[in-house]
Length: 275
Ligand code: UTP
Image (cartoon, rainbow, N blue to C red; front, top):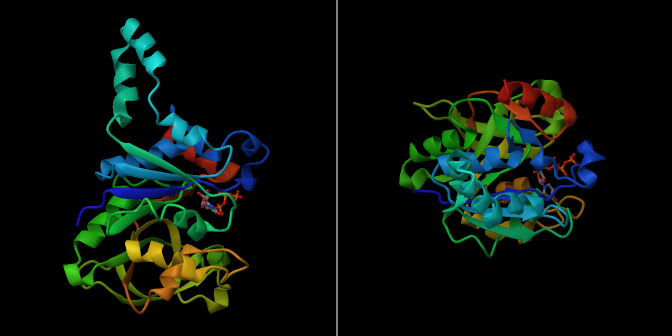
């Protein structure tokens, strides 16, 4: 099973970065000489995923534009003999980029739903823009390797997990573990998911972080979970609805995760990625 498609929902308002995000999407903040969003795209390309759909909102067109060709600039660089820069710019020449709009921020599941007609493979990677991982094996690679190690009839959705402090459970989706994989205990078979539980109600301290591999069926049932939470469509509700029908796994990722979606986390990411 090879995964070739990824959805990158980047339509959020970015309120934690206001007023900067009034005019510039936080996903275009630089880490080194590349914007954050390029780090996510490279995570996909490194895994052989070359069909990428951005879900954006109005005003965030700079995100897909970054990955488009720029013939005038290329001609200028060629004229100046800047072949190393041309090579860098040609990195995306064979990648298929697609953009869809989310007109209202009605949740992460609603964002993914906007890409439904574009999806044409059995499994799709989903990467949320704020989370970056420091491990040399990216979180997406770790998920993909975990899925590959399961037999064909065991395969299903797999979600990146992080063991978080108990007092932080109200900030995360938290999973309930049925059992750990015998040979690879980082792979957890799940029998429950709950959004942002109070610490005393949390079934574990394993929190969902921004990488998923989901079967196409998850995208297809998103309209059925509409409005379950204040009019939002949440990915977690679709996964909860599928607990009886699809195998569901979590993978406790190796490495450190950085939330670049707020100024403090971004500062930390700059220190780590630009040292
Ligand atoms: P967040 O909840 O962090 O929202 O979404 P945000 O708007 O990016 O940032 P804050 O909280 O207002 O500062 C997590 C991810 O889901 C996407 C966001 O773009 C981000 O990558 N998202 C969220 C959407 O694409 N659409 C939505 O309706 C909600």
